[in-house]
Length: 216
Picture (cartoon, rainbow, N blue to C red):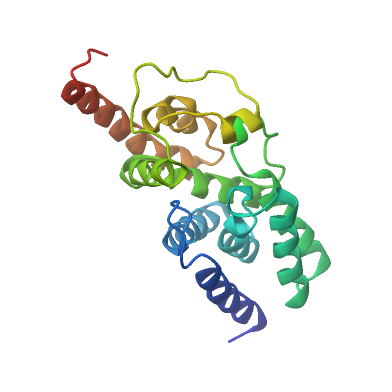
């Protein structure tokens, strides 16, 4: 086992421990799926697979939803990378990816590197389709949001703060984020994989409204 393989194994153990009790949809299995997808896209795009895999493994350790502040989460990741003697240019690349990949109500700048685009695509793919729907309801329950409330309209424009903290519903989240992700994919593989998952979500919403008794 070489040094990079050892670091990746240590990262897996660290993330499994840190996210073991998560019930928001950002648990170890989310990380596992995102990492697997990132590795697949990295191979197709001829990207730096070590950067992609390590950034994918660590990305939710820094998530502001799971930390006191965004800064505290980023510091936790930086500390781990420094403790494991990650080279400076690799550390900076990984932190640039992790600090800018979140959706944040659609307010983030585009990813600057191919590796960042890949990890972002992998994370966004896990937010759509059948798994994405399951995670949406898990997260809404974790936040105390309703499944659906016809009196609460979905939001077209919002700040990152509004996106995080204003009251919404699981179904609104489809319109506020999930249905937008297909057109925000960066890579060819990401775009291809997003198509089928997007169609599945549209079909799901049709069935949901049918059972609710609304015509949409």
